[in-house]
Image (cartoon, rainbow, N blue to C red; front, side, top):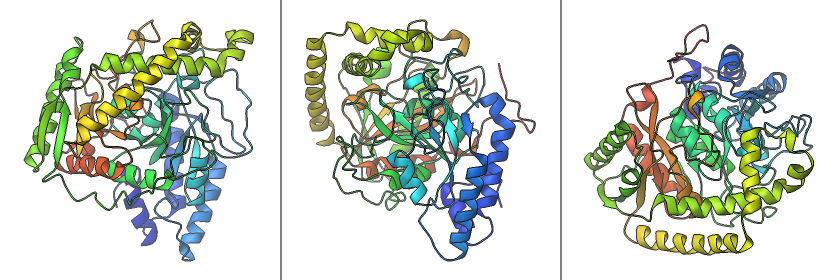
Length: 473
């Protein structure tokens, strides 16, 4: 059998059911991995080892007795530290919440637990899912398993790092401007932001009421499809939840792209004068791979990424300030500096500007859906214009772009997934985004899986040594 840490969710499930491996063995392996590497990678804020082993033992007994709760049964996972977890600290990485222990689970966490999944603990985040990495917060920031001198992306930083380092098969994230897809891109994993309303946000600390999305980070596309299947569905207690049927995401994973029409957003990398040349080359090679597999790929031009970003930023700043206004006035010193500066900027957003941004968002969404999905089955876009930056070279301006090209699909609410499509000469991951029409996550997975099969990037793992040290520049 392969090294346990390299087995996918699907492979673990098969091993459980043919009894060549047990949930307890897989969970112990994950916990050993966390114990070995977390002091360096810092992917987990809280590790619930005893509880995880209890749940793994229960899953093992259920499967042995013939009770099969589905493909996540016995699968170890992590949850971003903004998801409520009953009886477990939910800190949001902030000194404002050093002892907040919820009484109930977030909707997504509960769905996974009901399906027999095994919670390993809480993954590091950026404080309140905003700002930037900081040593001023309750826990230290997570680091990139490909090179610990580089950031793992945010705000689902620990989730991306945990999956890349083989600590967890899947980890829950949230995405308001790219906070699933960015860490997935920087850490070389797969991250799906589903359609707005596809996954309940109940029990997840909000950043922006109208822009927040919840979804999983995983190692490959199949695992992403399995994970989202377990999370998706209507929740009447989430006002934004969409009562739209959920298709079988795994059914079309092997259908390939032959005969599909795919648009490639060509202008965004050209607009960014800092675009890394190896990212541009990797995207071109990925498009050639899809063409070789039978897809028709055409270049398309969308409104400037900066226009989408300006619209999204206005909405996010206004809404996150409304959430934090009281604490900013009464206890500002408890926020880390990057978070405090980002949140305070929202105080200067005029109501008229916020309303105009909402109007603009609606207009751009309608235009995007009409122009793209009247012609194309899916759209490919760059995930970032830059690879992961170094911790010692982060911008002083917390609103500065980090090369993310993810915000547009928060504005439109479209399903979008980051998939690894190469590496820089320095060994840092490069990713593309696959984007679909509303509630067509199945097509996103289909295209992503076809590209993944035709490439060899999933055979490459972070340079972790046996003693837990990581390569650094």
